[in-house]
Length: 122
Image 1: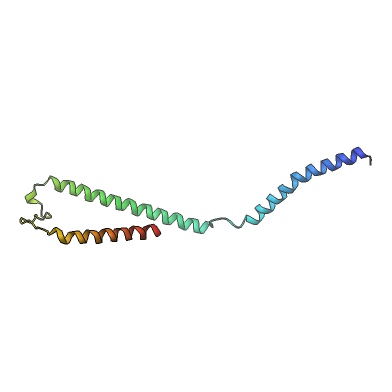
Image 2: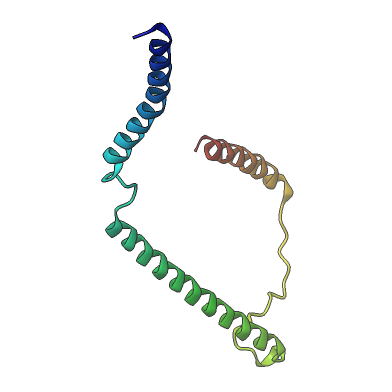
């Protein structure tokens, strides 16, 4: 073999190798991962059924809330004396001593700060 033919064979072989080796590697990866799907079909079907049940339940709840709101709107149109669910406000006023209230406010702000810290830690 002459020198020119040897150089052409080396270049052609290298180019062919650079193309075929990655193709073989990708084929091997696909063959290995063919059984490793992220979610099996049975589990996917179960999730789909659960989602549909959740959707139906949510729609039912929304319809119930809309019915309650519609009933409340119709109750607002009824005069005050006829609505049996209304509770009358007390007629006497209640007075509070502000001196005790100051210590309770400082305790409540301390509790709020601690609750906020606990919430931030979560």
